Amino acid sequence: MLSIRPLGDTALTLELAPGPGAAASALVARACEALDHARTSGQLPGLEEVAGAFRSVTLYYDPLLTGQEALLGLVHPLLKDTDAGEGGAGRAWSLPCLFDEEVAPDLAELPATLGISREALIDGMTAAPLSVHALGFLPGLPFMGDLAPELGLPRRTEPRARVPAGSVAIANRQCVIYPWESPGGWHILGRCPVPLFDIAWARPALLASGDLVHLRPVDRAAFDALAERARAGELDPDEFRTDGQPHA
Image 1 (cartoon, rainbow, N blue to C red):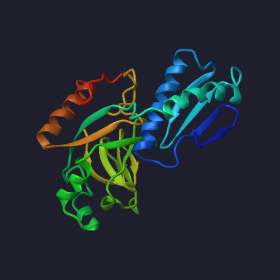
Image 2: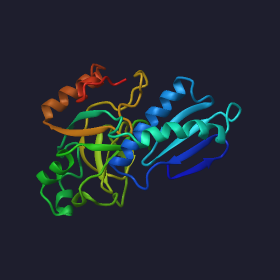
Image 3: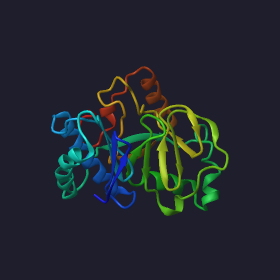
């Protein structure tokens, strides 16, 4: 643990790594899994929620039931175990993505901006799994990376007022998938038909910090078939798992 930052009298942020990246995401995932297991099993009385971010974990607690020093005394041994661990607690996913100008308004112009071909752009997004660094901005929205340096570019100078749900977009060597229609300033290059958030699921957000996501190109027919199943509520999240573990 690098540092501890109190957030008023009801939360603590524990910084676990010096910067974001796959290793930091794996460490955060291990810490969140260990702390949440301890919370649900009654080992951390007063702890109400564990929230992972790019390189930190925030603990939300009831100050009437515990305090910062008492909570940290219980948390430190758990974090020492996660520091010594290898790999990550995250899950592996293969999510379909349609790369087509009809759903991706920036796909036609962005290759020229980056000085690469359309095929190289798509390959750069799909050749290797992306690590989920954090969820934020919208319920279930994953910030994933890191993309190759040649795909690095800032956000759009003029954000869009409406970005359709499922849009796959990039900026600052990161990739996101919008779970809902929303304003957004990232460059839209594709669309994913798989829902990322459902309150009826045991774990409402499909993805979590530390997960690995492979974007799998599909054609229009396959995309439309999956989108229709999603609208009918017939898509099972486990269809898109590649590690054999259940979603929740």
